[in-house]
Length: 104
Image (cartoon, rainbow, N blue to C red; front, side, top):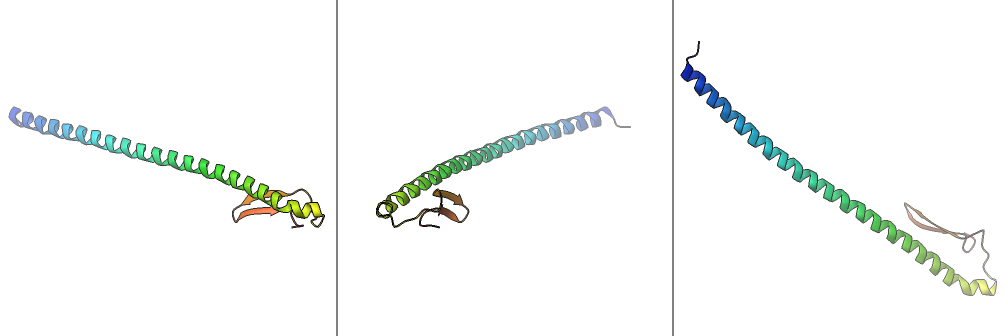
């Protein structure tokens, strides 16, 4: 059986271990919160970049359509161009596709 001085020493050791564990827990929590903030920041940056890219793609499609229309005006007025249906501009993984102009 342990005497009272051994029990007191054991109690002090356990209290030091508990304090060390609490400190480590707090440090891990801070690291986790910083990591979570970094991930959140990156996600927001990517979403904003995606939104800007989408807006630029829409803008480019409009410019392509307008330029295609403007470039076709002289040929349309002379009657030398035939449309195959309504012209359409589509965005695909490979780039832009303009259909309906010059019989394509």
